[in-house]
Length: 343
Image (tube, rainbow, N blue to C red):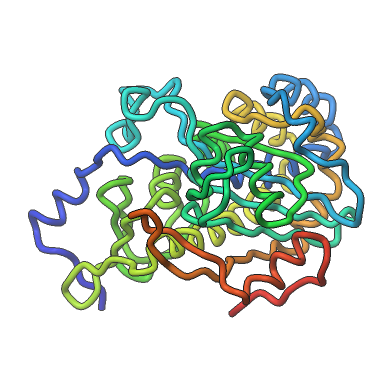
């Protein structure tokens, strides 16, 4: 039988929403690019994708597709431009006074086989220690994005050996609108769950989350469950968050494709809902990419986490790669076979 926190703590937790700055939104490419191309909506989709902002200056960083797969760098950024003080989650998200510009919160690589037979998603931990491209200095990979998406892409290629063919950057406004446009997404909770920083609170069960609730779930870094009469924090920290994000992406993509099969005319509406929050490289044509991505996602999305260990570097908590990560990296480098997903 599930237990609940006692009175005041329970109510206080519902109200708490401090300004914690993060927004894991990289899943949008997996939907925005894949949903378009359904019969009867290509023209409407073209009109809407034309409004998506393009990122200039990536020509010397991105590489032409030369092989059996395409690698997309997916960046979830936490820009606060356009935040609404009247929104229900404003206290937990904040505005440009809390966060200036854009910072990467989530970094993922989506590998899509060109024949459309499969797709795989690999998360790169924000605290992974790397040498930032063009600087010669070591720091967490998250800091590379502060210098621009081109520096982040170059750092990933330089440090991990993964060629980047396309880049997509999305902020949290698009994430919320995306989930609301498809009617929400269902996530199951075994226990009463909260994160006072992100605004997350869920009762046990399989719950349909709207955009605000979904963002609170995916942003959560202080994830707690009420077990045996006390709150227990997830000890895996950001790695646990990555696992939840990947599960959320798979669930949302599957639900969206199911909805689109029933109502293909939802595609232009979906693109319109996030077009102001997405930035893509100048060479990415969402319409031409749609067919193989739709096919790939329909067969299931493989998700991978790199095996890492925690250390301290210059007074900072950082992560380093373990040797067991090499088969996964080789697959995304295009040098090795599909790696079995760990149970």
